[in-house]
Length: 234
Length: 234
Image (cartoon, rainbow over all chains, first blue to last red; front, side, top):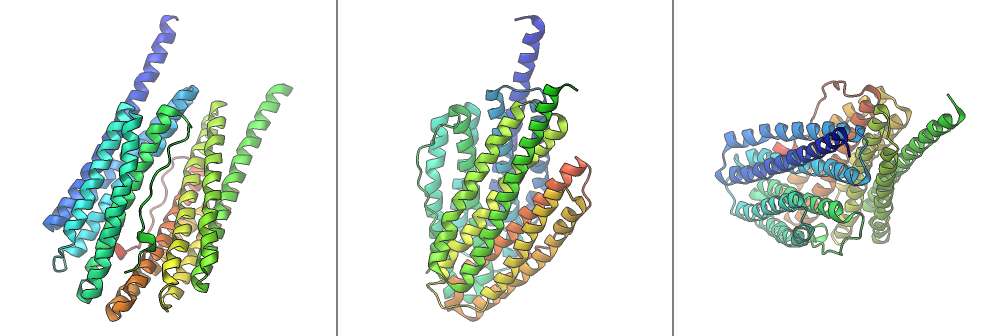
């Protein structure tokens, strides 16, 4: 292998590492946004909500950066393995972008809640949300470390998040039936809870991409899906 | 240009055309699924709902096919323009897959509605849904014809869909306040309406990808975004 070739290979590797670094940074930003949004809901803080909403742009900008980098990497004519990494990066960036959107939407809806009397059920939202934050952090770690087993654990835990979500969904419906004055607030809480459930799905997507990176298109083990809220009546 | 080169170029072109054909087919399937789901809601037909839910798999399979084809095309070492087309195809396939998911989710929720007394507000859902079907069909046409102006028109019309959605959101909240027995049904209708609003967003994404194909990264004109339901109180 001559000097020049060695140099090219190394720098391709560096670029891929940079791409992965961007993804992890983007993912941690999204997790922090979700955490901030939950905090904002709890503290009923309009100013902080506005900041969470405004911060979402930084994640969108990072996604565009990832897309640019992917195009540049592909133009270098990557090998099959690198291609896998690069296409997974595109998908992961898009999942993280959605997580950021959902976090910002939670902050946006908290502005309505702040105009209404406080509800005890926002606590349940916090519990659900913190579980999702953990899922996002864990899957980023699994992705960075190329740890397929850890990725599968995140994916398996999504069923717990779904169960918790379905429970909260039921509670919110019941609450609305008992107190018509809480309907507007509960409806926004329902959508906020749904956002968190969706964030869990995106963490699962990232877990599947991590698996795909390590094992190629080898079949993933079956998994439980326990979001029964689609067919829930109270 | 020698014979052999000519042959390679032509066949690359063929593959790209095949990829585009797959996308359009996939998109038309998603539009048909949404139409079927709306019909199922109107007719309160459990059997037909189950069929819509089962059909979603065909769209998922097509998305995997598109992903395979994209990898094969990239491995041929595409030029910059082709890369744009190929990456747009990935994004569009993912948008269409989501549209299919939302349609299937509407069918799934209709199963709950069928266990409950009929509500007049399902009509409003039909109107909203048919507007979204049209948006999806129009954007596929714009994509196939590489018609940037038509794509922008679809994107602009998303504001009308948002306005209609926000109106329905308000109506559903009001209805729930007046009749606590309708809360479960109205909640599912709220999520179904939200699904349709999101389908509109995905049609908009496809429109932006169509624009991107024609004009590269040239800035898109500003657009209206009128989904005020995030901050709606009744």
